[in-house]
Length: 186
Ligand code: SF4
Image 1: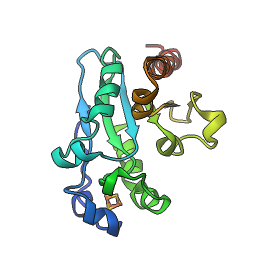
Image 2: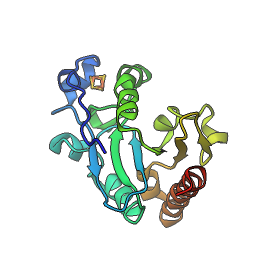
Image 3: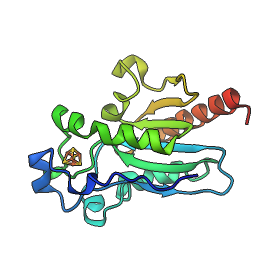
């Protein structure tokens, strides 16, 4: 399994003027590699928060830790990344233009990493794989490359509303895993 994504232009990217001012650094991706993995699960979140911006690693703040804990027993290697790679002032949501500016990077990551399962956390990430925010949430689809896509709550939402939402995230992830096993007979 390749664990290197070479996006050399990422680290010096200046497509989003506001984010070039607010970021400390461009935040790339992180791997959790598991020896018993049946596939790689790409976990796509929205954008880095303050902790991630300072340390240069995605999903290591409070919400990211919630997600990592929920996924701790999933038999997949985890590829963790964001739709938008730069911290925004006061952690505001990225604009539509910023999402568009950064889209090429996440598309390239998915092509290189070749995950068997792609989990989209939250509204912005969900738009990457599904058309309708309301009716497509928690759905699963299999694309023509056999990749299993699903969308679920963002872990920051689960932090706000409590254990029930964390349970829904877990249920969505394991449902996608079941579909992957069925489609690929593993
Ligand atoms: S958010 Fe993405 S497109 Fe915008 S400056 Fe950062 S790396 Fe570049």
